[in-house]
Each structure stands twice: as structure tokens, then as C-alpha cells.
Image (cartoon, rainbow, N blue to C red; front, side, top):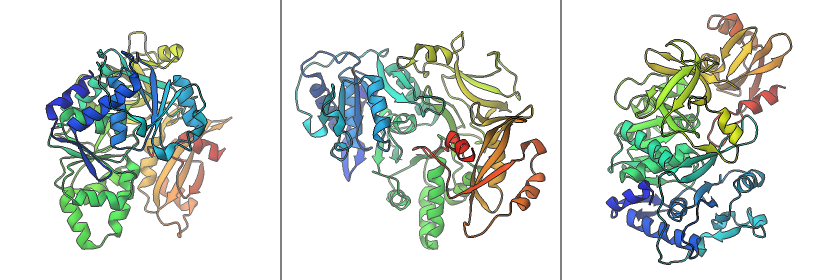
Amino acid sequence: MPALIDRARQHSERIAIRSGGKAYTYQTLLQDAAQVAYTLLEGKPDLEEARVAFLVEPGYDYVRLQWGIWLAGGIAVPLCTRHPLPSIRYVIEDTQASTLICSPEFEDLLAPFREAALWFLRLSEMEAGESALPAISPERRAMILYTSGTTGSPKGVVTTHQNLEAQVQSLVSSWAWSREDHILNILPLHHVHGIINILSCALWSGACCEFLPRFEAEAVFERFLEGRINLFMAVPTIYYKLIAHYEKMPPEQRASLSAVLRKFRLMVSGSAALPISVLEQWREISGHTLLERYGMTEMGMAISNPYVGERRPGHIGKPLAGVQVRIADENNQPLQDGQSGEIQVKGPNVFQEYWQKPEATQATFTPDGWLKTGDIALVDQGYYRILGRNSVDIIKSGGYKISALEIEEVLRTHPQIKDCGVVGIPDAEWGEIIAASLILADPEKSLSLDELRLWLKNKLPAYQMPRKYLIQEDLPRNVMGKVTKKALVELFS
């Protein structure tokens, strides 16, 4: 039995999940997960790593399905509820899933698969049973999550139970999780942020994970005011929307909410770069300096600002317990502090392989086993600072390597700019030229680009100045709120 599930026996009478207005104990979760496993096994002794894809809204049903797949010896393939059918089809076909499970609201979307050569199951078809469940070794494959596909087709990231256990234990230790914690989960559950950082850490600790069916700022604040929740993790876009809603609230409601937020134990931001302006606004509202951390699908979390100690704005912190991190040059040689290079990671948290892509797997590791993240950073007085992703955030112009993230931070300090995205546009003379897409704080007020350029001259060197501008209502984003730079480049082109 996977360690995450086995530990639930220690907390059998405690509330594990709050979802859909109901509370479910760890004992109930164990029983319902076993029921899923019996249904999937159909009398067989072991699924033997068969892929089981499932499409359900975040909540209790998701958890019992995931745990049931693991108990039966299968590989869990969670599908994104916001993806169109072609994206879902790609994952199902790429993993060669033998079984597809869905909740009622997705039956029409997945109707084309009813006649496919796979077992199409509804949630209501889970049957009670009793038989021996297979022994699951830590080395077994547990889950396949898909990358965003910013550089080619999405790749299936395969993690073992041992990988997941290492990712969870590192965070539980570093962020001081306990059974008394109660966290609100509003993030998609096809991504490590929602699955590992929130759900699995909570259940490993005997804590409670509460779900909202969808993000609404008012509903989030209502949950906070109930007084049960003491942890919150979200992406920068969500914090921005919460701030915007807070500013519309009457003064007495703001005061009540701020008083509740100050009692929280921890608040975390991740999955995208956190603008310093958002960090400062949230600190004024909540009294918390958001804890920024760094990770990716292939390794869970690797670097984090400290739970106790200085959290530096604009920095992702220091390596987590049990994780080795280094900055390396293009020849995979370690660099000194202050020198910029690629973040490379080694440890039991690092994924096993890309599903059926041995060449891509080999290419993402150095000969001595370090994971090449593709993210460029430097170490500044012991703290790692991200400069950008090598493929999209590092602009190569006129012989300079320029961090798009650093230019974005400067632009966001302009009083008329709410948000922005900076990219490199191919150019015959310069290699790339810098282009900036701007979201205005007040769309009713115009922004003079000549005045903006003059303002920037005092804040950026000439080689970092944007040459092209685009004013939009919003930036193109993925389901986690991260700006999709590839789509932004296409808009300029």
C-alpha cells in the first residue's frame, strides 16, 4: 500500500476532505478508495501499472478515484477539466489508457470515447466488493502528468510512489505541516501545485483539505471568515483577483477579513512569477509575506523561501530538505554565486521518465544525473533568484542575454500599468528585439508611449528598453494563470 494511503489509518476519525457541503473522514476515504480499486480490478490480482484516466471536478470524488487507482496497482492519469476535447484525447491516446472514468457533467464531452477500445466507467458504477489488494512497492509508477507543451507537444511526466513520497515529505518538513492544519484548495488537480503541495501534503499530515468547485473571490473570503482555514496556496493571478475584490468591500468587512487573515499560519504563491507589487499589497491586507517557492512537474518543489526566516521578494529561496540544487553553465559545469546559469536538480523527488520518450528523457538529464530545468537563475547571498526560462524569458538581443522578468518588474511599478508580459521577437539585425504587452490599470485612461519610454530611460539601460508595445485587456494565460509567452510572441508577429 502506498505510504500516503497507509498513513491515513492513523487519522481514521479525523476529517480528511470537505467538499460539496459534506465532510469525509479518513476512514470513509479509505473505504471508498478500496471500492474504486475492487471495481477496477474486476477480480484480477493487480492492474500492473495500467493507465487509468479520469475527468472529475476537484473534490472528494477526485481523491477517492486517485487513491483507488493506486490501491489497484494502476497509474493515475488526471485530466484537466478545462481542456478541450483534442487536448484530452491527446493525453488518453498518448498514455494508452485502458480505462476512462468521468463524473456526470463530463459524459457528453467524453461521448466519443464510449465506442473506443477502452473501459468507459461512470462514477456511479463503482461497486462494493472485497478481495485482496496488490502489494505496491515504492518503485512502482504512480502518476503521469503532462507538461504545458511550450516547446513542442506536451510530454507525460512519470513519477513513482517513491518520487511522490519524497516530494511530500520535503514540503511537510520544510513548511511545518501538522494534523491541525486546514487548507482551502482552489487549484486544478492535473498539476503538482494542487495535487502535491496542497492535497497530498494535507493528507500525509492528517490535516483537512477543503475544496471549492471553482474560484470566486467572494466565496474564498467567505470560507476564510468561517475561521477554520489556516493555510492558503495560490497562483499570482488569484492573489491579484482577491486584492481587487478586497478593495471593493466596505471598510468594516475589510477590517474583519484582515483580522482573520492575520491568524493564518502560512500563505504561499507559486506556479508563476509573483510581481513584487502584488506581494506588497497582499502583505498590507493580510500581514503575511507570501512564501515564494520554485518547482516543476518533473520534480515537485526544489527551492523555497523559509517558513521561519527572511522571505526575500523577487527570490525563490534556498534548496529544500533532501534536494540538491546547483547553477551550471552550458557545459553543465557548476558556477560560483552571482553567476547566472541553469538551475539543475538532483534527488529522490526527481521524476523517472517522460512517458515512452527515451530520447527526451535522456536529453533532460546531464551525464551525471542532474535534471536540467531550463530555468536561468543566480545565487544572491544564499538565495536563488530566477531570471527566466531559457526558451522564453531570456531574450538574446545584440549580444546581450536579457531577463524578461526583470523588465516586467520595472514596468509594473508604473502607476498606469496593472500587468505586463515581455517577450523577444525575432529580428534579422538584433537576433531578437524586446516587445512588451501592457495591461492598463484604468482602461479608460490612455497611456502615452513616448512618456513611458522617457520614464523607462531612468530605470533601464538602453539595451533592455522595449522596442514594440501592445496594449491588451488581458494576457494569454494557461489554466494555472501563467502567461503563455509563446502565444504572446504570436500576437506580436
